[in-house]
Length: 241
Image 1 (tube, rainbow, N blue to C red):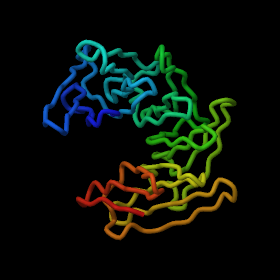
Image 2: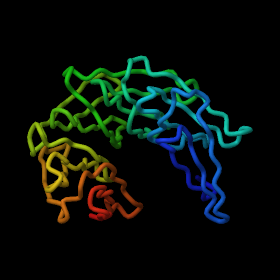
Image 3: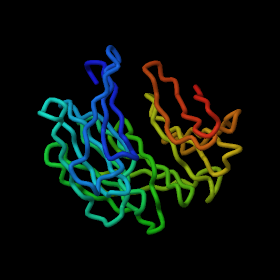
Image 4: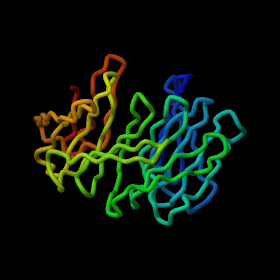
């Protein structure tokens, strides 16, 4: 956060935690509902509150660090067992997330937490991670079908592009660089994970194998210099491109 504290989700303990790196003090904030047992993805809203998903519990929520005891608000997803997953914010601070156990992407009003769902055309689609483009449209990897997808929340229009690795390529970690290019990792073959770049203007893909294979690359972040950082979960390594 702005004060340098580190926040994390206690995915197996039904809590959100804060670490003060200056003192090592850890503060834990328990979920107010026992059904919300697995907080998953976390992001900061523009007003300093934390927005998070609860995957198996089927909630989204906010935590206010400034409120007494870190007031937590939970809202259940309208779709049963939708498994709210990865979170990204638009330039206006609106959180978007995917509902991994459904063919839907959703957004939440940052003030009221009212959820809006955007169904994808194919009932078998399973978006797992998302990224926000420079125009605030949503890019996602269809983990179940092997597609890169593009959703315009204003119109509901969805475009799909077959990933180079085919139906079993399992797109996962994804992000967008400052030039508008979409980067993601095909994780279908854990021994040969592939970093993929997609140019939205030319509709062309480029590919690079990850030297170690990478295990399953679940997360990708872009630093201030524009370098890509990959979490190579299965091989105990972090990669930079």
